[in-house]
Image 1 (cartoon, helix red, strand yellow):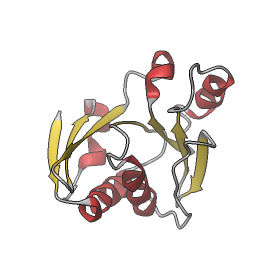
Image 2: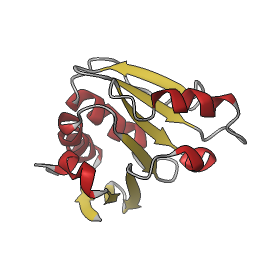
Image 3: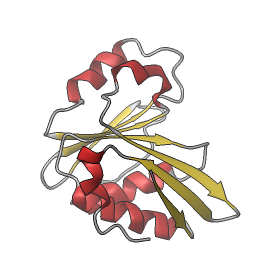
Image 4: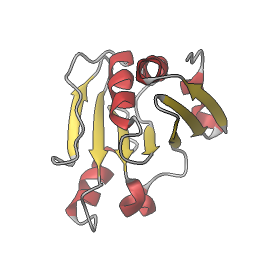
Length: 151
């Protein structure tokens, strides 16, 4: 597990930008945080780092947003408003492990049984007014995403 201290949301975006630049396609990132923790800010930086120029927004109401990046698409899911996975689980299974996608999931509890063992779990904790503490659980096969990560 790796831990990072992030000073503010601008630093969060820069942190995510570094990770986004290391993605190859096929990765799955689970984002864990309370409301307002910075998950969407993280995805904005991640997409930018992966070469996307798309507008990134929270998929709280749409469930899924896709962003075109340089070498793959980013499928961004948010299951906060759901009580059960239903057909959304099928939609998720279509992109998991597909090298033409990087999958990012917020509020993944409903679909934890379909998450691959080798996925990145990023837990964001609010510290003070603007700070964040980030814990990253990353299996050895995916540690390349943390190469050169700055804060």
